Image 1: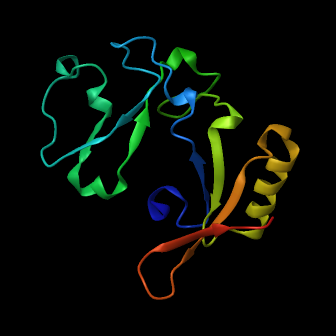
Image 2 (image 1 turned 180 degrees about the horizontal axis):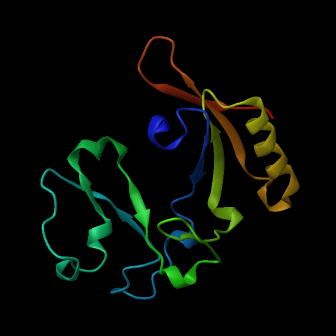
Length: 153
């Protein structure tokens, strides 16, 4: 994931508590929104018009090539966004989450010192983030994997 979403190991990842109530706020059994959903991986591209898809299934299917991600998603109605930033093609909708839903910040293996300092300052500046663990991803010396360990900041 780091090469795709973590700025080639120079960014950071937020680790959330998937059991936190924030991720289970559906308003009833038929509610398609406000709760974690597993992404489905398929070999064939879905072929239907947008109105033929059931619920939010359109947003929950990816190519089987991405199955190693084991991704989960939460979909929220755009009108519930706290901030909307206009973009060139699409607006970016930002949704707040409770600080208690956040477990850790994992720093990439190639993150700049300046970025580490900014993360540390942001955590120190917000008293509700005192429980956050800061960790670092580092390449294993003999295997093709990353080791995650606690980081002192």
